[in-house]
Length: 169
Ligand SMILES: CC(C)(COP(=O)(O)OP(=O)(O)OC[C@H]1O[C@@H](n2cnc3c(N)ncnc32)[C@H](O)[C@@H]1OP(=O)(O)O)[C@@H](O)C(=O)NCCC(=O)NCCS
Image (cartoon, rainbow, N blue to C red; front, side, top):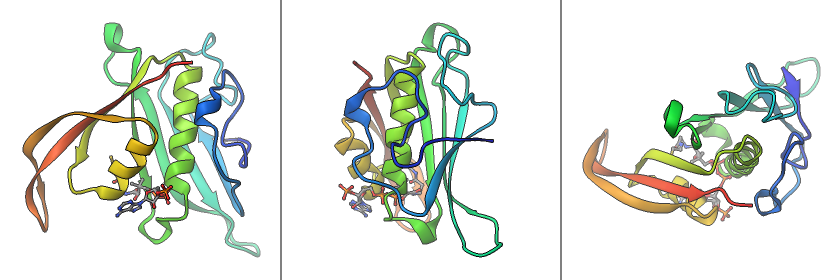
């Protein structure tokens, strides 16, 4: 696994300042996991699936704990592969600590570096206020909502948003 700079929230390569992480990380590391490369060299490996984890130091001899993950890959293969799709998951005990925003900034940077021209989320549950707030503050728009497309375990049928952001320099 290749380590990346934690405070900058990036791994080098082509950067877009608009996606720079707005705060420093303390006691945590953002890492790129296989099959990603450490440099995001788009010419060498364009638009390959990439995975990321955030680990937190647990102290002493204990190994660091994975507290959040993200994935980045083309939304569709072939002619649709210039649009990225990404997914994010923060450990419930570690939500609200900024890891979601950290990963989102990092993944947007990585997608930009890989030459993607947009990013789409295909299924954002309408009741997921935290995620929708995060995506909207990063410039994603709700393109449409598929009514009652998600059978929520406590709320019953709720809509699924398709959210999209252009990745421009
Ligand atoms: C959505 C998720 C990735 C956010 O990660 P996180 O680490 O908790 O988020 P952060 O701590 O970075 O906070 C991001 C923003 O969301 C806001 N937020 C969190 N919960 C919120 C809520 N219920 N309502 C409104 N805003 C909320 C935070 O205040 C913060 O806003 P700010 O930066 O403008 O102050 C995380 O909650 C998660 O993994 N959820 C389960 C899986 C999931 O829903 N994935 C996304 C699917 S589209």
